[in-house]
Amino acid sequence: MKTLHKIILPVSVGALGLLIFNSYSVGIPKGAIAVKGFDAKKYLGRWYEIARFDYKFEKNMDNVTAEYSENPDGTIRVVNRGYDYLKKLWNDSIGEAKFVKDKTEARLKVSFFKPFWAGYNVIDIDEEYQYVLVAGSSLKYLWILSRTTSIPESIRQRFIEKAKKIGYKTNDLIWVRHNQ
Image 1: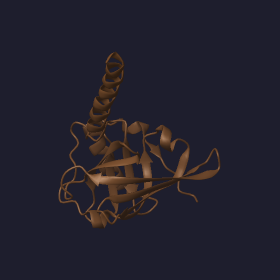
Image 2: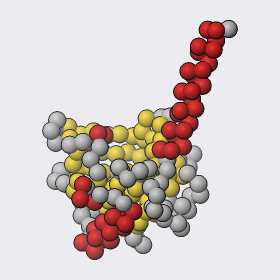
Image 3: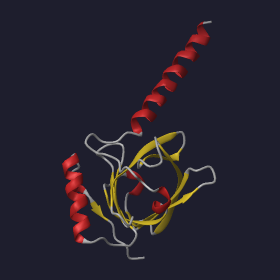
């Protein structure tokens, strides 16, 4: 019986921790609001990463793209691709995204390493679905994406101002090169 308790307690605590972590990790930063009236079909396709905060999975990467397509089960297939300019090689990462609530609210959770999920929240997008501002689960993650390798200055300023109001340190953004 003592052996059973030694196994059950750590496993239970670990499972509870995983549930709490997964619940927290698909959040949205305080002050950020996901786009309502979102059209996932219009969002599908290729996006070029224009700016991001530095974090370990995209360290030393330029020429970064994200390709979104619909899976047969209604989830979204995510293929991120970038060029590690130090190692001189291309890296691909394939994941899956699911809507947190309703498909018309741009709050998703994405996983590249199941069972771990992270928040992916579209907090601003233009009417033509050409430029987007994406917030992660916390103020550590922010992306500016475009259908082309650049964005108009007016959109850039709009996204920067919105991110600043939420609390993002926009001076820390890395502006991604697209030269390959």
